[in-house]
Length: 150
Image (cartoon, rainbow, N blue to C red; front, top):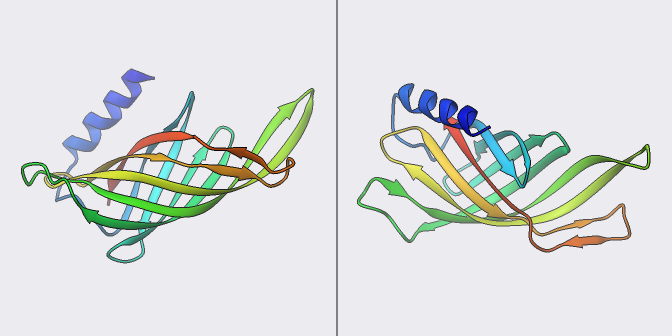
């Protein structure tokens, strides 16, 4: 898995043709615990974006609002924080029965936007409520990923 990530990152860096974007569409890899999948981000405006992540267990989407860049590193990386709300669907198998779950979630995290490359990296914490299983609450769910912007 690590080799795949390094190859994907090298490919994205070698294909760069502009600066990091705070607009447009980005596609990449997401990691949520031991689960990996695909992620996409579409900028709706200067500070708002919609994201989606598809893993082997489900599909999650978020509406995000981005704050200001408080920690800019040597004019090479922008690091705005973000927060938002989302919804998710997953399917699990318990005792040979498939269960479909619906989640309502929040999100808080940080983006790393590279000025020389159309790439962003991010981390986020997504507390969620499973509304189909007696309102099961997951306070700390961590994920991270990398996206290439077209």
